[in-house]
Image: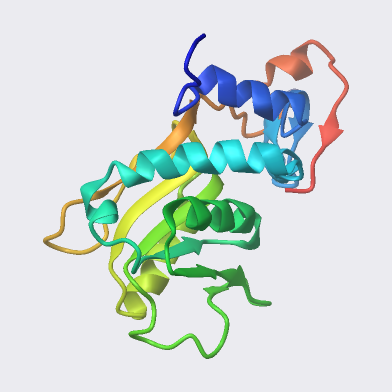
Length: 211
Ligand SMILES: [Zn+2]
């Protein structure tokens, strides 16, 4: 009998994402005009509770290995930069037995915010988690929000991180950067337009994605 692996490797995670339709291969065009041969729609993996559990428990195991996190538990807040990361945040919170959970949202002006009445000083040291980091932008904005709240960021993890996105966070002057842990580091291919897109050159049918 083989012992189940505590943290599934990158191939196993990609298999879960493929099977659930969260990872797709094809010829995709974004509203920005960019073309890609692959597309992630992570909530499709998280609609199956078992997937959500396996992926979030794996990520929580990686997070727990960080001394700054394990020594602060349970007085830790799990933070999602956006509603898309909420399933990850709840499942990671459960696995780590952390006391708090928060998520930010974009308001009508496109500014990332926490809900009103979350007050400065109330948010425990933060572990930011998300389903995917494509550019690192959402995570960085969340670090800024937490800094305004007077909360220290002690950890960060995403299920998938594009290799072009930062692998660590500069949290504040004088503190060591916080590594952005992930289960998969994905080598994303992007074309700014159809000009250099290899699928366009093959006349492959186009699928337009909303974001
Ligand atoms: Zn194309």
